[in-house]
Image (tube, rainbow, N blue to C red; front, side):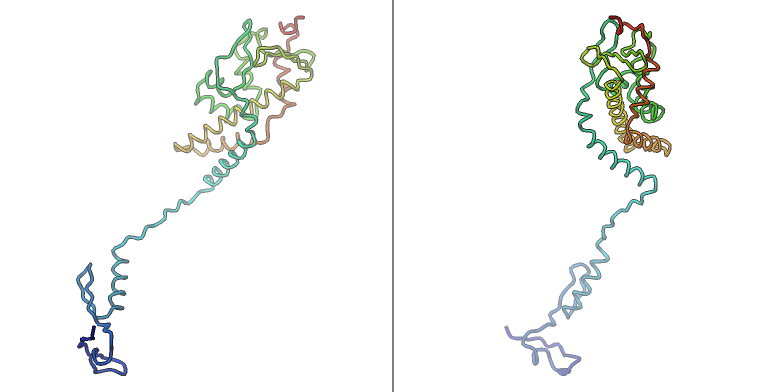
Length: 255
């Protein structure tokens, strides 16, 4: 198609000539902006205008950035450490069974597999989580006392000790275990106490994610997590357990 454009060239070596006289293809076709109806004789002018008007009309999405405080960073670290700890304790947690009514034999309560659920049944979830992540931290013997000894006659304790470290207790299979030295009861109690505190920490973190939690409450969770990471001191636990359950006249020791 022949070039019929009569636009006068205003610059360059062809200044003063018509477009059709020097160009085979016309570049002066008028373009109308669809947004503001302005007409442009030059394509590059229209493109420049189009870019400018698009920038004004289109809203550039902004990425919201949340600035984390020192407390937030500490809590994120806590959650990551907790995840690692949970992975390390899969073997422990696999031993925790669904909470059931604890059986009893001749008024003796059997030591269960799931201390956390037993405490929840006894005092409620909120109180159990608060207790396990605050006042009970560093004092595991108090958890055992609250679960199995509190309010009971010493002759009905599910654990008894004589001669400093000779224990007998009812296990989850309702059998009396004879434990010289306290190794078995120490391992059993420390593992289940650690799992109970771990489950309470996990529940406390879920509450923190949903509610506005105070700094002191977060500090308590951090402290509980620090404690459960280092583990329960078995030697101290066995000593404390022998002290509060010492009873040579207990029915478990009647031959």
